[in-house]
Amino acid sequence: MTHPSSESDYKPSGSNDIEQKYNDVDGESNHELELRQIPSDAPGMPAVIENEHVDVPPDGGYGWVCVAAGFMINACTWGVNSSYGVYLAHYLHENVYPGATPLMYAFIGGLSISSSMIIGPLATLCLRKTSTRTVMMAGVLMETGALIAASFSKQIWHLFLTQGVFFGIGMGFLFTGSVGVISQWFAKKRSVATGITAAGSGIGGLIFSLSIRHIITTMGTPWAFRIVAVAIFVNNSICTYFTRDRNKFVNPNQRAFDLAILRRYEFLLTVAWGFFSMLGYVVILFSLPDFATSRGFSKVQGSVLGALLNLSMAFGRPLVGLSSDYYGRLNVSGLMTLITGISCFAIWLPAKTFGVAIFFSLVNGAVCGTFWTTIAPVCVEVVGLKDLPSALSLMWLSVVLPTTFSEPIGLLLRRPDMENQYLYPQIFSGVMYLAAAGCVYLLRAWKVGDNDRREKEEEEKREAARGDKEDFQAPAEVQQERPRPFEKWRGKEVSRWFRYGVV
Image (cartoon, rainbow, N blue to C red; front, top):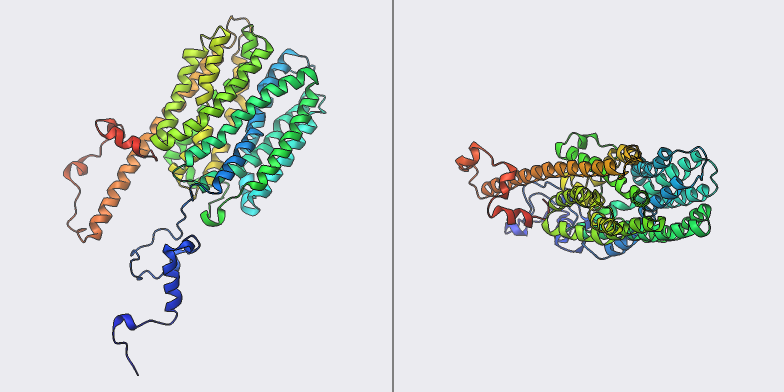
């Protein structure tokens, strides 16, 4: 019987297969190899493997095709929904449906958004059971069918079901199916990619606001519904085909209701940010055309204000996303939310001329949709990429109430007997955005503290790896009291935290 001359000569049975798997870790096949297949005592392997499977987004490649597809999908979903202000102004000033009240018309726009949000958990469940393209194609068919049915509506409740509920459900399936795809393709450029995608709603809102006004004037409301339905069917079908997820690499948690996330303080702050933002956002989005006519402007000028608001969204959202990648997702989200609230008081409130109203549309449009631009990257910072689908599903549910009742609240606050009929809706929108900015500030404070904790844990691990764990003790000042998060703004720490792309 021969014995190995050295330890290196001994190779147990099957060692060649294990060695091949181990060597593949640094090769191109590392994304297909689970670390648990590698023996823990293999050379260079850590003693404890924390993550069984590590995926690194390519930060580009086919991801840019998905960004282009997402851009066009947003143009033909949220862009169409953004143009409801044109429909609303037409409904309020024309007796289209006898017996309908302004409050009823206000609920239609809110129902389309809230329906798209409330269907989120079901769409997430369908994603787990089927595929991304199947869910998105179901949304295309429902959205198109809803607008075709709306063109034959004769009573107000027909619009509630078609332009409101069913169009919103179709929009929700498309949105839920596509919104998480971008984050799977990007890491460092995640916010700017999401911002470019979100800008599609602005371009779509611009195009549909102007074209729908012209079609209604020349051909009537029914043909406006039909022409838009054909356009969105063709566009969304093509974009659905080109959308490709990376679920087999990311292995996302697609549980519709992960209640464990709701027990996290930081996620509740994120929910509060979205709740207050949507209360102000919907009022601004749907009220501008009617605000214009209440100030004595023409209907065409009202549609122009809505179009310019959407145009500003198209250019502002990518810039917000790019800025958040460089200066921090929470830093930029809080600042842009604060600017939105201030603009309601400083620009919209005193707007008496068309020029000032245009200025408000351009300034506010660039920042009022910050929630939609940064919500996915912010959720990644709060709960991680793996739990992103479940977190977004809960986020969509949390904004159902504000999106449903925001515009009705705005119309109830309107005072037709006052010189400025929209005085109280303007104040309401501004206050809601200021409250939302406060929530982001608290969320940022949590993130700074969480980064402090992680840095301390990493330092302790490094000390332990050098064999100094027994002798290592934190400095006395650290043991006594941890600095409060807002103290990181002092001195040189400011630039340090702004360089963090995760704060």
